[in-house]
Length: 246
Image 1: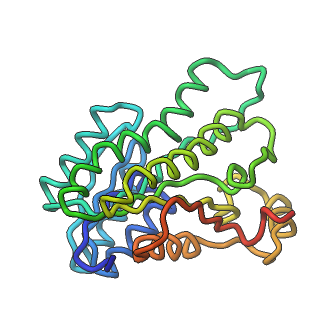
Image 2: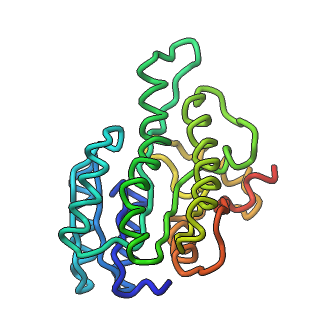
Image 3: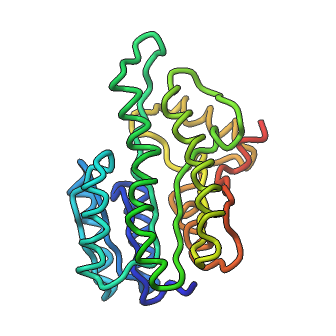
């Protein structure tokens, strides 16, 4: 699928989502950005898309809410005329000891990291079917794709992201005949958290075979590849610099 003149919906307009939006705009796509709390970041990303001469839309949406997901897709189609690509990037990444996890912690993590991807895909698929093609790109995690938990205190996140991989595979099988390809990206050390100190950053670098953080461009390139492919579906692509090998 050529990116130029396509319409892409990205859930999550902060950090990596903003970088993906900017690059797709530079390559000629119109971009809709769904955000929950990061309105300013989403607006800046939209401004960057418009600076490339492309259209951009910013919509508030809580992906835990089926109505919000449906409305986000509907507004994208109503405003931008179509929907070719859905990139599910909304995520909740919070450390909490197992003994302190509440029912709400569990439910919120699965709702944002798993169910939101399903709900947005469910709303987008009829439009892609009508067009005869589409791309859905979900976001998992390198730890989930490795098949074993590596960090304590992220139990709901790990379970949700593992399920995202299963969702990706099952949707790929369901939709292949409709020309809709579904894949996932499993990022590793891409951007250091703002609160990670120098020693923590070095520890990650030392544990990564390529010896560095990937930077946002590593994920951007993976998204572009999975949009442009005409034959890959049901795959989870690890973008982790070989982190899963250690």
